[in-house]
Length: 79
Ligand SMILES: [Zn+2]
Image 1 (cartoon, rainbow, N blue to C red):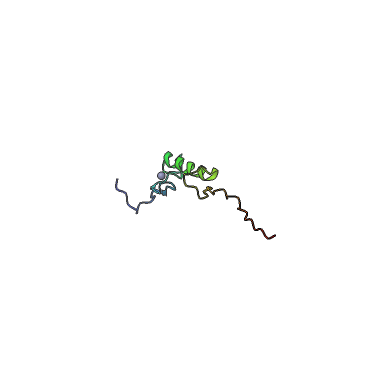
Image 2 (tube, rainbow, N blue to C red; image 1 turned 60 degrees about the vertical axis):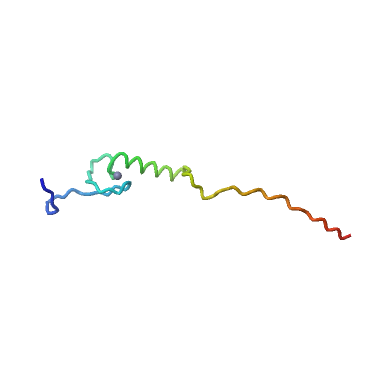
């Protein structure tokens, strides 16, 4: 069967939020609005990572400040 846009009921297309692939939407699809289980899990994992703050390897706050040496007290002998 040839598909054309002039058909009475074109299949609704959905853009997968995860992989951004355009796929035929199925309102009964168990992975909606994702195209597959893989994308749903990937997005879920990403969301969880952001919400609980799983370290991704690059931390913006590098806390490697060296301890300051104690101030050297100069002996000014103004007696
Ligand atoms: Zn996808």
